[in-house]
Length: 155
Image 1 (spheres, helix red, strand yellow):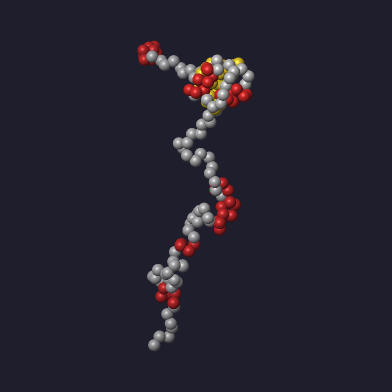
Image 2 (image 1 turned 180 degrees about the vertical axis):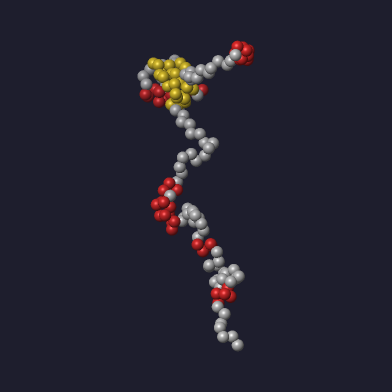
């Protein structure tokens, strides 16, 4: 006859659930993960903590894609030139001129580029469409191979 009953806890050793149900107390599943786990789109229970301790966590910061290059094109229509400027010389060397609108006066328009329709309308009204020359940086003159050899021989 046994005098002392065996401890329940000792019977649970080696058992995966240790005397608890299948899900709870089994592993880290009940604790909600590690680190930033559970801070997804609808994680309202974590939002206050994230906003307090990791401020710029939500939203987009900086460049969103390496391949994206944002280029601003300056564009003006022929009709806008007629509204803004009186007849004569107009310097729009950073703009591309498009053909929307009407033009009746004589203009000499200097621009980066022209659409075919814009050029046609300006010339039809008696004006000129002049392409602006882009400034190109002057590169150093390439040194010929013979000159390099002579420099080495002198040393």
